[in-house]
Image (cartoon, rainbow, N blue to C red; front, side, top):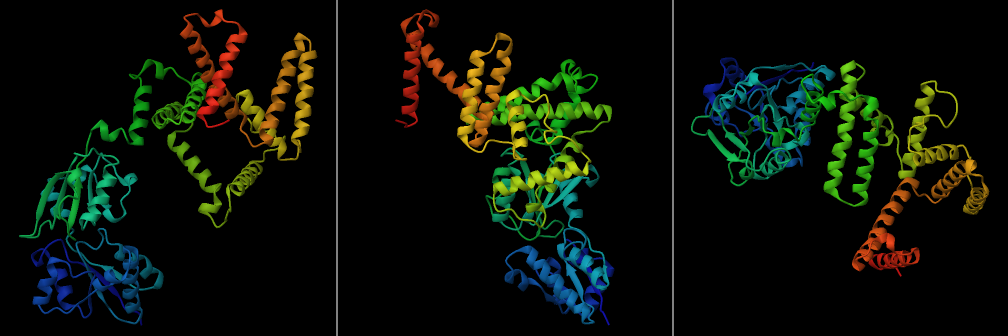
Length: 492
């Protein structure tokens, strides 16, 4: 016959804080297990003659906390399956930050083992009392052993538990510094509510790990803030700023924008980001990406005002797509290299189109408003997937020569069309060699600017304007700039 597990909380302090029902459970338990003996009530249990066993040896045996919690839960569940009735005592309240209790409740139900949770005073009560904090104002309870910057919400009271030594405090400090300034005030509360042991220390964040002020009963408190220095690092703050700009009493320019009026800005900002990438300027890249994000947020805000969609829909759709198109990461499939990843991506896209009952040309899905060079690239890539491409570079060279001759012999009315054919064929040659035509042409533009500026500099040295020199003289300076540039790059 299956036994039963009873979980009870030892409270936040000594025996004086124990409720009567918990006292009776502890003193009357036939089989009492403690998660740890490191608690103020344990000495009293010994004096009272209460017999118990603890899982402290599991902490020494296992390499990480998940493994500790796993073994504790397994041992208790196995005892119950053997017909025993263990009482399991944990610090504080059983339902506050107790991973073992969560495991017992979930797996006890799966295995048909009754798990009953009894009360116990939570450490949160004396902590809030000492800090003078009303939890109704909103708070977060976070685990210092698994703290990420994304978990933080600077608008709320935040309590970080499991900060039991200086090493853990150092890791917590570094995570907090991703949001907060170095001198932001934090408070360490140790043994709250325990007579003669309680210590409350307020320090600037950078000093959090400077002293040995931590133990198993330590909690780090971060007060809420309205500081722009902190809040401006949160995505929600940015979306709120955009909504404010679009409000009736917001910015006149932002309020009058539409999807159509904003169209050119998204392209401009994207190209400015590419320029920063080419310059390898990290600060400029961060700034230009912000400008790109501004355009996205403006479009999302405009759509939210008409009920079409909002930024959460944008984020959800993208999250769903990333998971769906990366089965080798989020599913059971595998991919050996980037080429295989790209192939799977295209296969999934094709299935999605088929699922949407899309029919027609393989060239569908390429926006007509793409820049001409980008559109030509996309069209040729699509056509190549069904075998419509040149197999040898010599064939493309011959076609280029043919198109060049047609330009030279074309009438003025035909010339634009023939020049377009030449460019289109040049794109094919670029793709054959695995070169992005857009980036190649942008690099050529940057190179032209660099060299022409050197030509202008040589002209300025003479005191004469650039347009006063012959083409031969300008070309000489151009070639000199070209040679100097090659030497700077270590080329012969």
